[in-house]
Image (cartoon, rainbow, N blue to C red; front, side, top):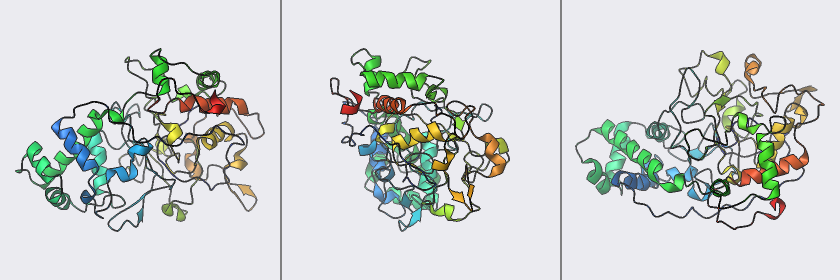
Length: 402
């Protein structure tokens, strides 16, 4: 299954006539923050951790990186809002849901030829430092109005002394901001809590744990080109010998329904077209890329409260059901206006040729039998739950997955 933006950006479900699966596996409550493994961070990374939790670096003085990337929620959104709220007065709604920032340490830079790699939903940042720059100066997020203003905040913050020890005090404003972004990047690269590779899946791969029957069946659905076909976008193996990230680093248009809970969508002329804008500017003329968003990894997907770049869905079973029936029962997901079904209502008609027709969508029409059975969907969810961090060997699966 080209699960597309399953993990990408958190949000609130509803709208578009969407409905949840009739039955689902109970999702465990979010674990407490992943315990800090025994590790020694470099001075720069330790500074980055402090900056990550420093609210005085935001325009409002009340927002930290952890506000949207909470370690208690796999460094993703801690709530079910479609988009998070930021800005100088914490009154501005974002345009996309907040992603988890775990497992980004191996994300390659954007390749404009192969259309792979990059960070953010539209790949416009090539490094974790560049990604943090976007957040620090976004008026809907940290809203630092200039490099001079942010540099002043750094020098007046509780991290000022440590910052001086690491970088000195001679840099100009632009240098100070760049150093702050380097520290945030170092923290994300070095801190094992952001990429622990300690899920049940990892322990099974290491031969120290075994899947239950439903989990094993779910893995088969995940791999089966006639059912889930998930490995088309979410590779469960790695060519470099490292644990898989469950992404091919590519981009896909999945046709997620429009989310009326995003204030920007109140304008019927507004569309978030991913790679070709409006946030990314350099590919605006590439019509064949409109509607495509980055395929995230699936680690910790069962811990998310919201799904897709626009946060339209609020449960994992709902997302799987959408993939299974998007084309066979489109009336379940898209609104009907004046008696006409508005299929793919969040993508202008001119770009609908960009929508994925790969399995599980391949060749399906309204009224056809969906590729996955109810049992397949439940088993697939059980497998995806094995991708959650912090599994203790010997801990039993939830009752429905045993």
